[in-house]
Image 1 (tube, helix red, strand yellow):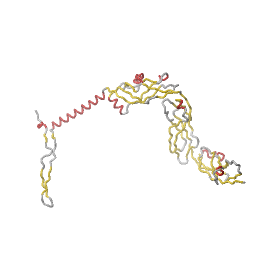
Image 2: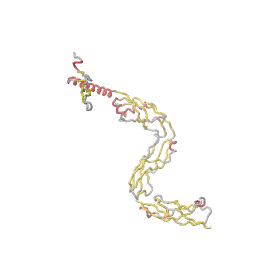
Image 3: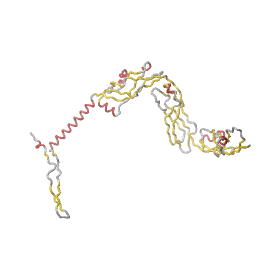
Image 4: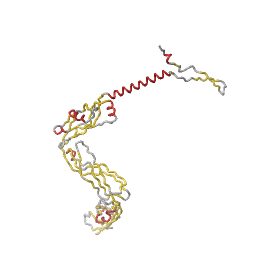
Length: 353
């Protein structure tokens, strides 16, 4: 029988110190310095190191085998899943009375649980709402077979919590509302929108609860963002999604046509009309015309003239506010023109007695 002394050699960690005498420069004497020899605590023989290495190798293999066995064994686990609906009622508008997620318990393995925690598993179930034609609730347990038929055999659903979904019903309404384009378009220098932006179609059909449909006056698109545009633009843009699960829109997208052209500057003379002359004063304004400078697309340059503009001067500025000059303002000009300025901006006037 081997004793501990036969297999290991224990060395004192702190062996007796060695005394070293070091001379000093002042006293020419000696100062004792203690030094220790660094030595190993345990020293193993070659056979002992081989045995220890084999022991740790076996330990690692055992741990790995234990982990793999547990991951491969059946193990129910619970995950949250989003509820999607199919076969929704056509004549009844509904609203779920609970959250759109449920706790689903699955029969799987440790591997399935691992992949589920890594979001590598489909986290949605589709619930059939056919029974809502006659009831205001759906029992999920009655649909387990249909749900499991669409799932892998190693990830079958055991139970769902809550087991029953309840719904609130209201009258269903259909409404057509105009589409509102959300856009941010950047143009190259001297380019811009030359005419009205065309949407095809320009209306969307919205259906859902009458209480919600009555609040809708327009439907927005997703943002159309384009930069450095220098020519006509045509692009399909999706409409924003519905906020309620029992609402729907048609169509889902719209075609946008943006007429783009190069712009140039043009000036016309526009007569100024006096307004709010309530006491019928005999008034002469100076000047009687103003110069309006604007930017217009090259394709429309020859089609725009002074008849497309109207300018006024408000006499209330003198009669009620005692202004000595009247401000010229444009009351009409083409939508596709961008006003640069009006000259002169201030109008003198003479009241004749």
